[in-house]
Amino acid sequence: MVLDLLPYKQNKKGRLSTKWEFMRYAHFGVSLSLVLISWFFFEYRPTGMGNSELVLLAVGNMFYYTSAIILAFALKDNRAFCKYLCPITVILKLTSRLSLLKIEGDKNTCTQCGKCTKNCPMDINILEYVKQGKRVLSTECIFCLTCTTVCSENILDATFKLDIGGKELIIRQ
Ligand code: SF4
Ligand code: SF4
Image 1: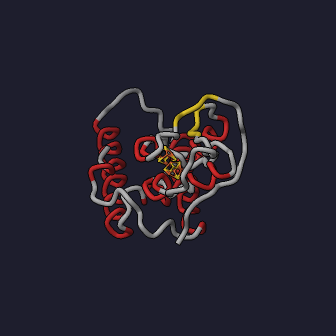
Image 2: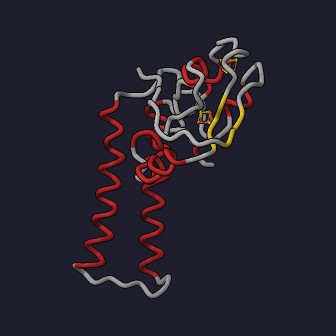
Image 3: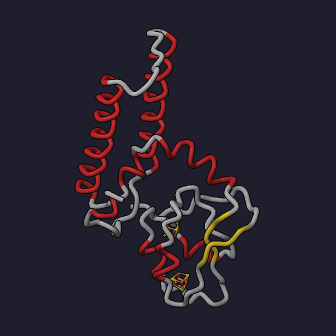
């Protein structure tokens, strides 16, 4: 919600190269390691929300929001944090593969205007999926439904099917 209030809804340049996306995996690894070290080496067993837990929660949230806002302004892209730094995406990418709910368009009605791709906050090449007669199989889709609202032909919608796998079609710089 906070990211949607920032001024760069459209990333005009496309994504940075894939190597920058590895920061998400590094962040996930560091976060998981911190939890495991606290649990096994320091035998930290929280019994409820005390002062130290509140401080940790506040510090974690401050890090998330500050880095997300700085990244958004630096790269002129509201969703830069989701694309390069968010550790949650590591798990969400796996569950997205198995998701039955995905975006689909009718390739025979598509005028190939490209509006959907241009407005996708995650730089997904939606038009290419539609042209290939496939649903949007990218694990980067955050299901914001922006593409369904901007399509001039009103042919994009969420559909319920089973199609695991598929290529990541992302617009890059
Ligand atoms: S739902 Fe949002 S993230 Fe997913 S393809 Fe459409 S515009 Fe992109
Ligand atoms: S916005 Fe609609 S009509 Fe235009 S390219 Fe995308 S799916 Fe096709």
